Image 1 (tube, rainbow, N blue to C red):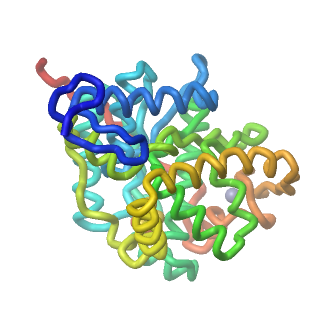
Image 2: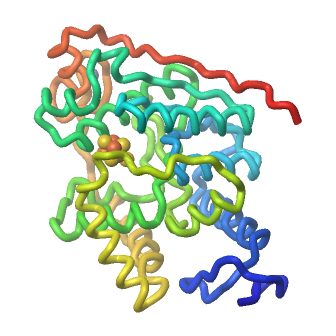
Length: 313
Ligand code: Q46
Ligand code: ZN
């Protein structure tokens, strides 16, 4: 198999694009795809101060690396869910990327603030771990971002994550989430940072290849709570569709971007804010403040700042 750009040996075939590329041309292709996504959808402006949510996995660490290569200065935030070894190893990977890029990270330890891990918290609030985790992460990322003077949170959700979430929302017509799955979620009246997903059109397979070709040291294990997630079933179904018709996932999401723009304009959102912290909430008090009250914890989000080590060049 030959690279369609330079004629050298191709290391990856991209059936969705009818393309095959060598290592260097693939790296440029992927970085360029992220750049084009940022530019076309105007995700990052020159005066923005972005913060990237890093988990230690291939997507967020590769995205951090790509943003650095594209000249977007980005600091990181890591949320330690206190899932024993998994969280410890993830944090090591995140720190090693921070050292490599010479960027700082804000670290939030769940156990330090709540005295409990994610599993215990999920039992207390009677929500599945992923739902409790989503609520906590959204809150903490937003809070750290606003408190530390950032105005945007970047996440590493890739094309496969987004396509499977979209399929799930469509199958059950979850209208309240359906039109929020785009590339960006706008900031709201000074209460929320904008959220963007520059990997929206980059597949899991492409991200894994990028990580390997750039020697990015990431955690290969998945979070133990992701194993029984329905999203894995949706991913499998979509992969089978992709196998018989390459490009299906890409078309699914590109079509969604077009339609969701119209739907978002038509949709008027009724919002209310938490009486304690001012965060968006469906009731008088947000889920985070309710959890704090229940556990007798003060609304005081402690986090640590990790400064990169100097690596001899
Ligand atoms: S980290 Fe959290 Fe994921 Fe683990 S508990 Fe679920 S949501 S699976 S991105
Ligand atoms: Zn609140």
